[in-house]
Image (cartoon, rainbow, N blue to C red; front, side, top):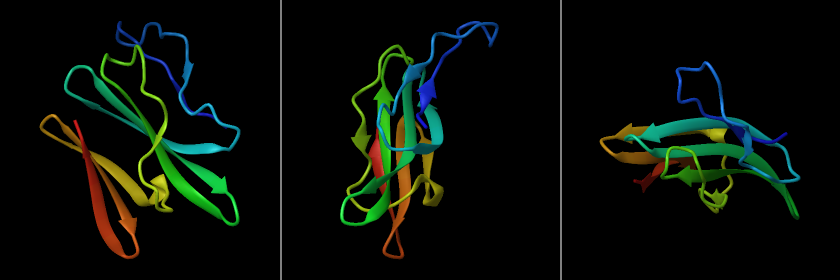
Length: 111
């Protein structure tokens, strides 16, 4: 399971070719996407990472040109979490990633 992104510039009459954002061998699930301003897009999803134990982690990619290109995939945090227990929000031109860690609510800011 991978996360794909396609865009439309004509109100959904047609879409660009889908682009694989997650590009991993593990299952990528629970995608969410938000836009900030006219051209910044954040896409996030959960993946199960298995080393000694298996943990769900959140990964994201960012585009600053309306989805034409995206940054490399980055872990939103190095702590075990899941997009199921997380959320994005926008205030002004900033994006906030909100998540729970050890019974505490935490957030990261992006712009």
